[in-house]
Length: 256
Image 1 (cartoon, rainbow, N blue to C red):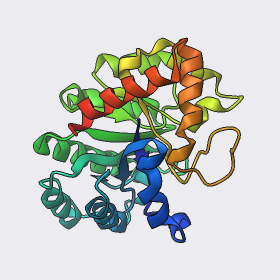
Image 2 (cartoon, rainbow, N blue to C red):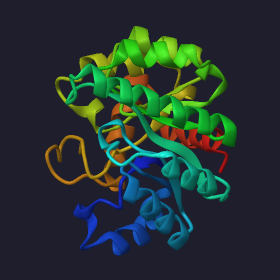
Image 3 (tube, helix red, strand yellow):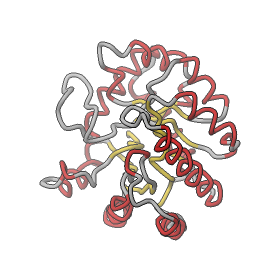
């Protein structure tokens, strides 16, 4: 069975078939799914999906590019939601400098990243970290707040194998999705090759980043079979071993 650790089924691109798709996933080999919040409204939507489907869990948090309206009240709402047993992580949170070059806005991203990391520490939950074009600041901030004491995953990993080793030393997992199948993904392929299987998680980031041969189309958890096959090829093990090891990894991190 596959443990899908990062999807956004609350996204409007699933409006027409969301219920049907989620209901059938277990019969297709997707045993568990973490639906991850990114916007303030999506926090409640993720929790509702987890209430509706036994195999779906929620992560609550606000993406660095979606911080408009972020406030103490949002943090307090999250603080209430993390007491529910199917809220299994704080995420996705982090830094994204790809779209935002203004230092003042980047400073706001760092402030809310820190606040949400501290909430995870307080709640005893892992974090799901988004980091894009912000490698140095992400690692510096994590070291400054002793993130080695807050378990988590670097979602949709896009940096160097050397930096991945630093995260693994801190106890973090590396999230691997459809990008690993792309022809231009040499850095990620090398990262997977060098990262212990015990530190790799499967994810889609649905509806984004569909793997080959469906690149450019809407992504969903069924496409993880291609990610599994690619990791198995890189590691020289069977797809079944990839599924089993990553399942155990996710269960251990998210305590489900």
